Image 1: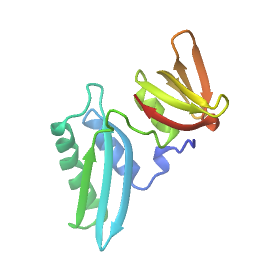
Image 2 (image 1 turned 180 degrees about the vertical axis):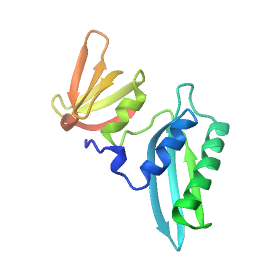
Image 3 (image 1 turned 180 degrees about the horizontal axis):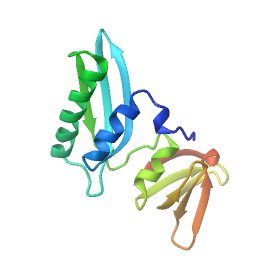
Image 4 (image 1 turned 30 degrees about the vertical axis):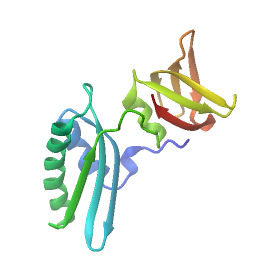
Length: 147
């Protein structure tokens, strides 16, 4: 699994402070242009979960900001929660889900590991598997998802 700093993703730096200012965290941001229109898909999370009203609040704020950034009124923004069983696509996401239960496919043991995320950095995630805390390097994680 790769660790990609979110700040290196296109338009992340324009959107993240806005989402954080509203009390949420930006998990994923995809920006692309299709048939002359800007398409933006954002995934957010919060301490108390995410509901429809949370997505609507972030949608309104992001739409206004991105219309200015792209200098276009042809911007489509979709905001969603990570879902109950989110597949973790970037190792940088582990820090956003501290305290949540995760299931990892560890290539060292060629089996799934399940535990609670204790902490993470840019090289490994520390999970509590019940009897002990185990540090798993991202290079040893083939798949990961929230449980």
